[in-house]
Length: 128
Image (cartoon, rainbow, N blue to C red):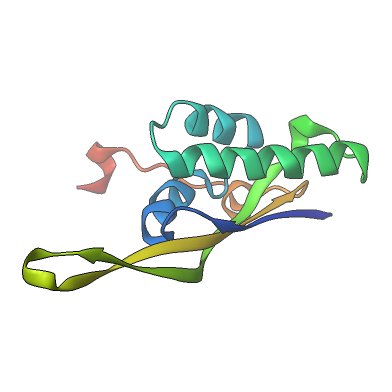
């Protein structure tokens, strides 16, 4: 079963937040939360908030065990951009774009495809 949580209009650019979501995709929830707690970025805090909301939904609404959940999907979509202007020299102005994003986290109790197949580790000696 999949559990989805969405945080819309987050005040962080999608480009900056995508770096963090790439790190947590396919991981167990406990490992993903550890990564988010120790990542010193604003987007990590916002993604962690969204993930905790999804965990609460899984526990209370769907009665799923928390230790068996994985991050199936973590996507960042672009939201609307606030357009502002900053005064510049000699009476001119320059535009400022304040970007927003939509954070979507999908948790699943099924193991990710990589874990099911069992990645085969090839030692460097055998690779030669």
